Image 1 (spheres, rainbow, N blue to C red):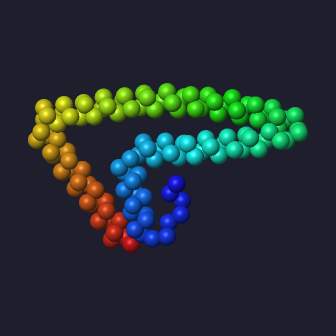
Image 2: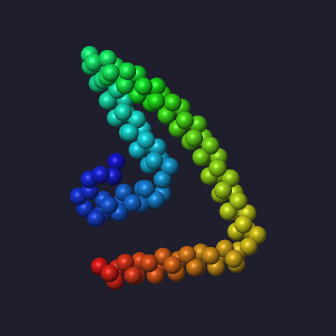
Image 3: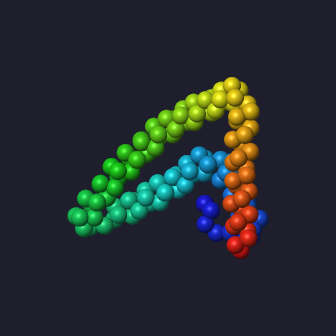
Length: 121
């Protein structure tokens, strides 16, 4: 999905999309990967070698299990993300000044790291 870029503008847009929607990007990448594996398995169907036939059956079974696990994992991941967001909101409501301090320290650390990186270039 983010393989070829022709300009810095496209790179920034891709980075923004990745930052704003990491789960959607990960899901899309997994979908592309599974599609490629499915294409490979389909191409192995024409092979006459018994070893390739055995490997094809194993790959099909593994792909089916992976699809099921990814589907279940997405539901669990979504629920965990919601719970984490709720806990974060509770913490911010209970300790607003502490939260503000943590954000300020984080921004300071990011500023120092980016400043050093830019100075190294």
